[in-house]
Amino acid sequence: MGRRHVAGRRGRPLWPGAALPGNLLVLAWPVLIVTGLRQFYNRGGPLRGSSGADALLFMLCYLPWLATWASPSLQSYRSLVYSAALAVQYGAAALFVARLGDRRESHALRALCAVMVLQAALPFLTLLYTAASGTPSTPGAMRRSMSRSAACVP
Picture 1: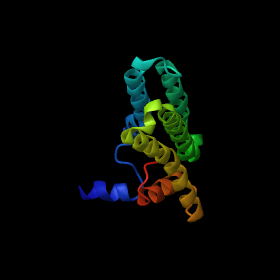
Picture 2: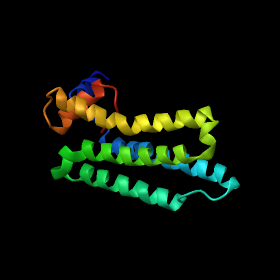
Picture 3: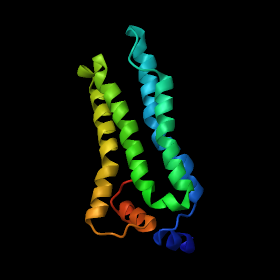
């Protein structure tokens, strides 16, 4: 167990394959929430957009990150692409929740909207903090610095 802990401290991931399903789940969360809200609130009349458009947006966000993760030459852009994907996904979900008519009366919907806005902004704030702190731009150094600031940006 000691070697695993030390290896994790040096910035080498213990299970690099875990990034793929983990990031897939983080990016899929707003799609699942919006799909559930769309089905629940659709009883009062049709809502803007569709679940198919949400799934397409999800794929347009996930596939560029997957390409940067898989390509050795694009590794330095991985965090930036993932942050942009999070901002697009969570921003679109927050916009959907903000447009719901019942949001004005529902504390839960207002809280959900606020959480999604924060989740869209947090990765970029973390990248700005990392850039301002003067850490090297290598992917391993960026990942170590971000893990200290309590944000999940692979």
